Image (cartoon, rainbow, N blue to C red; front, top):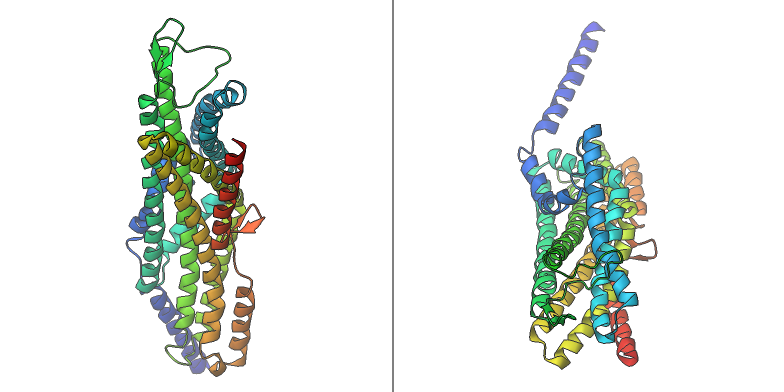
Length: 421
């Protein structure tokens, strides 16, 4: 009996050793570089405004400085937007010019909403950031790492495309167009360069030098901060959603190779690991949906309105022969189209990738498996039949169909504005 028990103990120890060896046979020594590559653009844009780092220190001094940073940035945004809104609704007389600047107002106002949405949901987004780092550190094999790198490159490509178009259109709108615009003639017969954002400061009138020049520069700086805020939030969305897609893709890859080694004894353990990865992917996507559905709603509704008024600006500048303004509005309109398309595309891709898990589970030779494992596969298929979706404020799913709806709705609004104006 003692000999048998010693033999059993030795075999169990050997099994545990073999399991530890199999677990430790691959270590991603580049996980820090991979993780930094994924979030570098978002971190660069969002750190100055207090949204990133999402998981900084928890000391009282750190929290105080971050809160102070957020208050200062929000105050600067309000310093630009509130007087601009007052001027628009109480002092604006040129209806054509008013139609052209509404797009900028909607863009900046929605940037404020998205700014506070990310701050309010900071804890959930911090969990997503930590899970991303864990996924890079605990990646199981080089093939899984290649899948994750591929999706990280897709997210970065989307971000670079949007940033190039956004800065390429917004910076000329804020800087070049005011400089080449018709000068404002004052009562003393002197002229001024119009501000990037016409404003009505109720308590003071910055009309003399050097106050006016300082206000002009502050408008450029604050509008650039708002643009960077919006671009950083977009970069974070692209990073998180493409990473969520890669988690489902990794699950599909493991299901496809589940029976490569035949009916071995570790099959149930492999399937358990796959189910665990599937649950982690679902939880990651659900956290994104919970934290960012208001941001997605702002993007879809805002893109519809902004595209409409940018199209109007293109028509007006085309009729007036304003080549620089025409190019600027076309670039801005293209960036908004790209923004809306990419968000709709990644939402569609996430939905398809979550459905693909069920198809991969059904495509293996499940009829050769023991009955207990077949039941486990059935649960995976049933769960995958309810796809993971990102929604715009719980109203509609992000999909290419939604993008088509944005395009058609913006065109309908444009026809209405042209008929009225």
